[in-house]
Image (cartoon, rainbow, N blue to C red; front, side, top):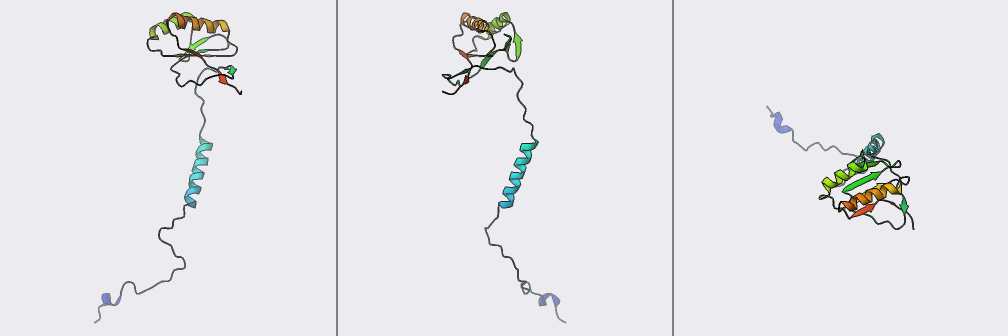
Amino acid sequence: MRNKSKSFKSGVFNIPRKTRLLKGDLDITPLIDCVFLLLIFFMLSSSFVRPAGINVNLPKTVTADILQEEKFVIIVSENDVIHLDNTPHTSEELKEILKEKKDTIDSLLIKSDKGASLGKIVEIWDICRELGIEKLNIATLQGKK
C-alpha cells in the first residue's frame, strides 16, 4: 500500500500567471478618485448656514487698520437701535451695562451702519469716555487705495 499523503507534494503544480505584481508598487489612482467623489458629495450636500446677527452696512475707508481683537462689540443699526450681544438696548441700559463691565473691557468696537445717525455714535462714544473706557474703535470696510 502506498501512502497517499506522501505522493502529493506542495509546490509541484506550477500554474503560470498572466499578470505579475511587483512588490511595493501600489496604484493610488482609484483612491484619489474616491476621495474627490466624497469631497464633491459633501460640498454639494452640506448647507452653508450664515451665523445669526444684525445686518449692518459698514462704511468704506481707505486708511482703515485691521484690529486683531474684538472682545466687546456695540452695533448701531440703520434706524439708530443699539445692539449688544444681539439684543437691543436703550442708551441708558447700555450705560448701566458698560458701568458693570467696565473693568473687564480692554477695548470697545462700534459697528455702525452707514445710515445710522452720527449723533447716536457720538452719544455712545461719550458714554464710554464718561465711564473711563478710552480704547474705542469704529468698524469700517477697507476699500481700495
